[in-house]
Image (tube, rainbow, N blue to C red):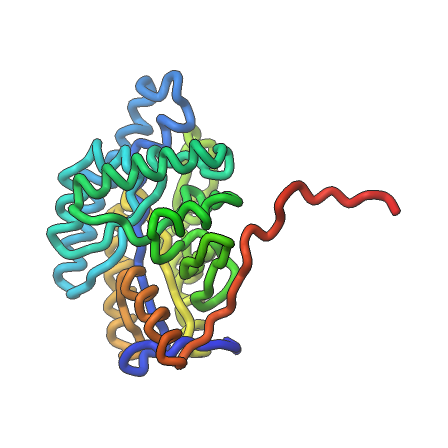
Length: 299
């Protein structure tokens, strides 16, 4: 089923990472730059993430002995330093997620690089180390992103969706490991409803949302050698009823004996180690896929 399964540590059938994008209220300021300060209810909903969701998530991780990855826009690192300090204190990874959740594919190369460098500096100031991984806000990876990640010494990206297993993004500048995401394991579609964020959908119950998340997990576990990544948000999945269901999920996954829980940095380093020892040869994608607009012409 999976043509190129990864040999995970200790014979695990699937590598799992619950990643949290702590966007906080960067979202509303980006969406409504002129009057976001007047949208008090939406700001409060988004502040729930760093102020209530993150402490709850970290407490659960401590009980289960998990170290995981958080992607945090640098503006949020600066606005909510205590939340980020708590992540670092507990040994979790903090990755790059834009400055204020801006879309890289709307920026010039120089602007994208500026905000990347400014964000790296903020993350180093508050965590003590450079980020090793990137997740482009809303997966908006640009034709320049891979080159810039290579230039800035990143190990991996987790924005693209091209496989069930890790693969490699290669450019003229070098390469990074791709740890692919998947909308089916993102908590935005089942849970988010916000007029101010221009996303109005029916909210489903935690059990209904978990059906989709677990279907992806069980498929990876059955096939063997795959990668399951949750792409979640503290203000969304950190809500009490949803998080109680996540705790049951964690307990179930650990109870199978088939799972390797790790940070994305650890997963990327394992992939690189397997490449070196010859036990895994990932697919290589040459980027960019296209160098300009695709406009079919009449013959």
